[in-house]
Length: 164
Image (cartoon, rainbow, N blue to C red; front, top):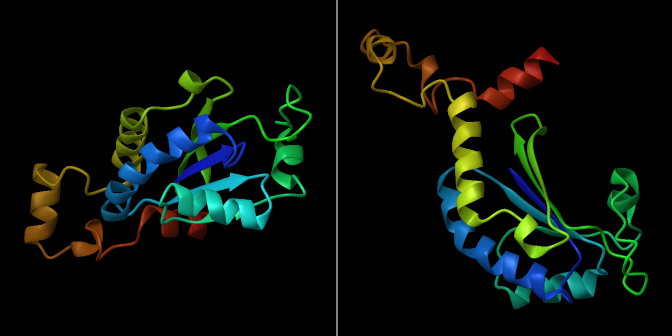
């Protein structure tokens, strides 16, 4: 999962980042990955931001700044808007933090290729059938042990939740 914490629709840097995420989102859908954006905008501005960049994933409005306060990421250099310092988080199943990007300056934010590489590493780690060309997995399939393969077996997230 990717979580984009942003200033909001008024910020040209947030808009540009989200234009890139719109392109990446089509890949995320077929890769069984999720994306969510959270800003400190009110619900109207949040919806206008989402529509303005033609995004089709959840945008959450946090005008009470709960996330900003909980994570201690108030952008103190902008008292007018009182936004969050932009961050992009890449999460593993179970909401385990894999990587955090801090994007106060635009080039602190991940490129779409950075996110692809991060998600590749996360999926490689959590998908037991990542490389179905291994002799072990070929043998398991031949023997009918399909629990090692998606969608037949338990997902990594299910395994993690059972361990909790």
